[in-house]
Amino acid sequence: MTIFYSEEDEGYIAVVPELSECSAFGETEEEALEEVKTARYLWLETAKKERRKIPKPQGREMLKAVYKDILLSKTPSANK
Image (cartoon, rainbow, N blue to C red; front, side):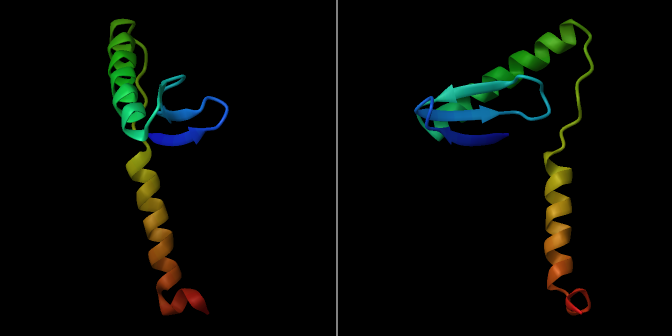
């Protein structure tokens, strides 16, 4: 999930990138997070009922790739 402040909306927007059009609004980050959790649950329940393909979460894989890049950049052989 990603949460960012929207000046246009004067509040926080939370999105689930893997789930098309799954987002929520909140006046605080915490409120946006709680709202997007509900939206995610409803999105997944609807997808199951309609037998739509549910994408695999990519967050952990992306985090692993970033962490790996950071570690590699800190090794002496990577700085040559």
